[in-house]
Length: 142
Image (tube, rainbow, N blue to C red; front, side):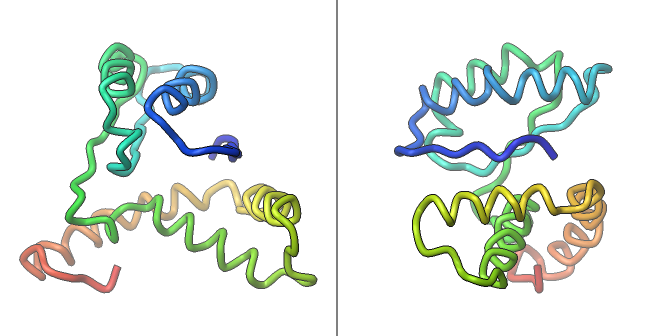
């Protein structure tokens, strides 16, 4: 699933560009050396910045990038991963008491996720899209 990256400050377009170039690109070229990797992000301001968009377009031959509609955040598997991490941290005993404890708990929870966790979520997409179509773009149980 890649690395969990800790940011100690607000994510700007330039900082996001650093993450893309320093972490995402090497991960994708190693794991998806055939260029068939797929990258999805939400529509955070930094993700949609000019510098990030330009970089992603420049690397379109290395992996596919999916644009995500801001109207359907509940359909984004990134939200499921975030929720699972938060739930895992909430179950920890003792609970994290400092920012460093929280970071450690998040990193540990991330590493404890089974390797197929993300693939399982990706495989739910046909059902999610079908539910969205049945709801005619309205709310779904996802």
